Figure 1 (spheres, rainbow, N blue to C red):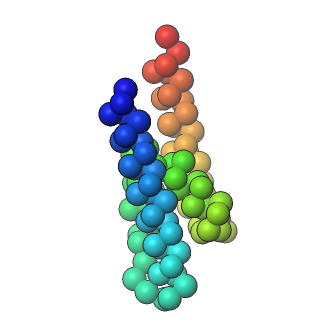
Figure 2: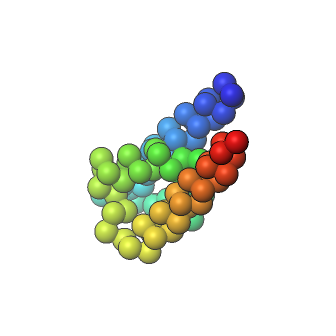
Length: 87
């Protein structure tokens, strides 16, 4: 269980950092992080960090196609959580 919490902390920190980096690059007109990579971080457990970054940094909140994919990943994770821990 300790490993799971450590993993979730690291992946969420990484997701937040990547969203922040992408926001900074967007401001500078620099090389951006692809949406595929950002959503991959979410898929592997970084949804909380990504959601915090989206809220606080106001990044990727106006792009509806991204939000649909993000919330689909979140819904799948919530469903899996309840399936696993329903016992």
